[in-house]
Length: 415
Ligand SMILES: *Cc1c(COP(=O)(O)O)cnc(C)c1O
Image (cartoon, rainbow, N blue to C red):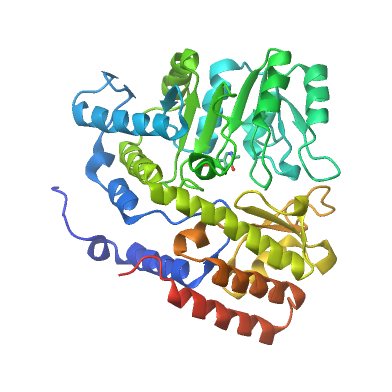
């Protein structure tokens, strides 16, 4: 049967209607999930093209399929733009996600049973850095470091654990850590014991690209990332590396852990990288950090404890213990007032990971939406209003009304 080229709304109205509802939800809610963002129409347009039809196992100039001459151009552009953004020696844009990027690095230099060391999930790390239920924790002997009393990374402990356990790979990077990471210090710790040093900058990539967060590229052997968080691209991942590791990383991605690259996504990554290279992106990220700092200050003024005493990035980790509600409940009550965030463990959390004593907030998406000081102050106070009286239905209704006023003023994707 020849394919019918009709619109999605006609071919599959059921799915189309759900997508429209999701669009409405994105427009009507204040998005505070620190790992989310709104990508541009141009990025989505590239991702929705016929490039999805093409198989291109291999790399530009060395494919295992015919018909790749245009695909090659696209992947080369994506690689070159990415190298330029971070001033990196080499790049691989094929990982399907941040987790795949990490797996590829593991596959390139580790064997099952080797020792790795990363930040513990409970204290801000990512599950792919050695968590028990993740492949990284099952296949490797995983050592965890965490935070000190000031809720900053405990570098002395990192050094101690490194010397004691001699991990073959040390990982720096986090999903719920709002402070700067001292990549140079990690580098020296790793070099001292002759171990590989990997930075997972999934959360901070956009800030790093704009010079708003320390750049790990001079220090790390491998740098992994997502493209869809602060970098504001399509869902996906990438790896940067020193030139001497280009070969092993490329063969770890393909044929090591992946088959054909998603060329429509790689095209969308290229478009996003172009946007990142524009001067506007620096202004955007400056505002992201400014907004996070304002939001953190407002919450603090309203008597809500901020983990690590504030933020230097887009992330704010909130401790709800003195509010006597769990992160799970806070997340769901905020959602009923159209404010979206996620529950998150805090350092030394007395609650189980499914409940938690914290929520994580982020300023990347709301800043893309156009929120600045005035709106952020309002958002902070609305969150505090909910957390002050989480079970008062009238209060929730009032907050929801105020949220609507703000979201109506800042539509995301117009029709
Ligand atoms: C989000 C994140 C990832 C995983 O990204 P996925 O694309 O969801 O696989 C990896 N590492 C860190 C630090 C992250 O925050």
